[in-house]
Amino acid sequence: MDRRRFLQTTAAGGALISIGVAPAGCGNPVSAAPLAKVTTNRDATFNGTIKEALVFDNPLVDPAAYGTIQLLAEFYTELAPVGGAITLQLGSDITASDTRGYTVPVDNTILLVHQDVGTFLAVQSSCPHAACPLGYNANKQLIECPCHASRFFATGQIGAVEHPPANAALQRWMVTISPSAPGTTVLVIDLKQAIDFNCEMLPAVDATKKLTLPLTDFPQLSMVGGVVCGQPMGLGNPIIVTRVDASTVIAVDSKCTHLGCTVEWNQQNADFECPCHGSTFATDGRVKVGPATVPLKSYAVAVNADSVVVTIT
Image (cartoon, rainbow, N blue to C red; front, side, top):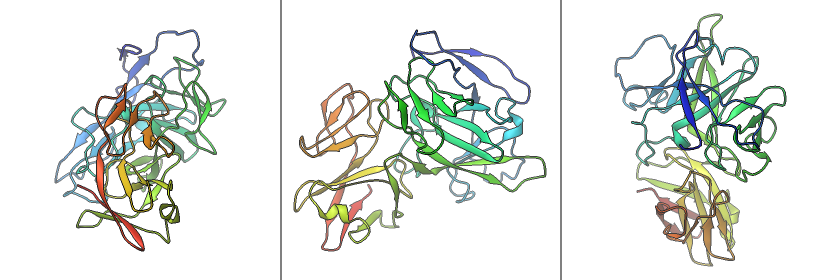
């Protein structure tokens, strides 16, 4: 937080907090998108009209709505026009856990961009380099860091690094437009559908907390050094599953416990390494080299003749 200062302002159509970033001399000519607070909704009888951003956190109310952020785009003057952007700030009561069943973004913030008519983009708002809040450059169609020179693609390879010093891609979430009254745009950001740049969607975790990866669908797990990075439905964060040797497969949470970058498997060193700040983790998730101080969560894995089964506990 020492790289950021927050100044509270009010904008017509929605209460926003503009994020002021002190000039660093090497940043991009863009301002961090203003903050819009997200209210946590656990109301079992909610049937109101969506205006201000809500995150639905009660799975018993509506399983389809659970883990989604919903908001009226026209409510936020900075988001309503094409090229506009806001930073959604989830409450401190929303924390990552395996039981939550959806991905909580780094720093609890999401950058929401109005790219084109009917097209919106949601990515993590915290830059992987030094956690500065990101902004959107509509002219270049790039997501940019106002503190340093990092830039990320907002089209094509969405979230990939266009310019360093950041060297890890941004996490992304699916955005859909919900049927609503004419002239209004109700957005639904599904936190259950997180998309890491180099990861993929995996099968759902079943009722017994098992994630089954058939080798016919994931043949890389048949080979030593083979890696699958993916987001299982029903799990908060993506996981990395790696075949270490002929008989051993390991699985860990993919998010570095330092600043949430996606770790990568290094077969030569037999460890997981963070491309952002250099933290390394052993095969059981324990920290080998900081700055991370908390181990990666690891999962039990069974290796069968035709599949790899990860137990999510």
